[in-house]
Image (cartoon, rainbow, N blue to C red):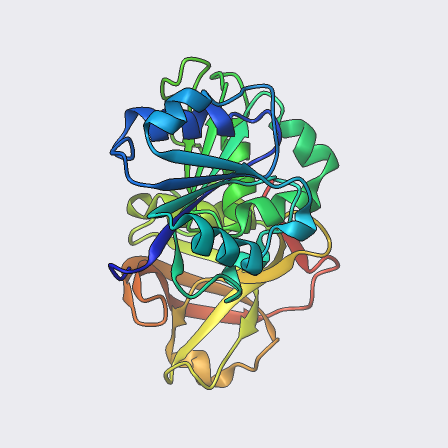
Length: 316
């Protein structure tokens, strides 16, 4: 971020999820309580209210936007010209579409510094059951998701998969009513991790895909076998392809292909969209296609296969 840019911190989540308490704590007790001119844009009003006198003392100006159509790049440009803030915090309405902020519609002097999503763990399952489409908008651009009001008996691993299915790079944390961390522990997969070759059934593919990313150390050197569709690209080096599956992240309108790079001598024998049973060894290493370290498969063998009755796999 350049020194002359204005950092924007986007705090997203549903109504009564705890966004206001989180922002108030950050602005009044953390590194941001330094007196620099801060603009706080509120896109919804919940039960918790800000202490306006405290905000004023900290040189924080709060503005309210009532309608989704009014919150856009032009609105931010006008705010910058009028108030000259050094930074901007946005308490986003979780029902609004924030995609425009990531599609070059922001003023040129504004740069998104961080995106955090706050979720009430006690009501999250209701949203999963009834509003799956909204969750994609909520999690797609976030860097961090904090589930608050959690207890150890909640299906926290399922909560994490709901997030990571949409955004595999998002960090997920759990807190109880008092803000103390809740550790769900490492999830035990339904397949045998100690088998000579781990058989991944269709119903477990989504869980395996996420768990390999979350816990690469327990898959290092392991051999796996699963049904996959071949994806090839001219951008891949010779001998590289992706065996993967179409996965439903949250709803029927949000299906994407997920899989890991595979290096194999037999890659040249395969055709794109061909179905195969593949056996491969998993290694965690740097791949330029990822731009970082990540799971890379080393193909051992393959068998041609028929297309399954249901091509889609799931994360829950």
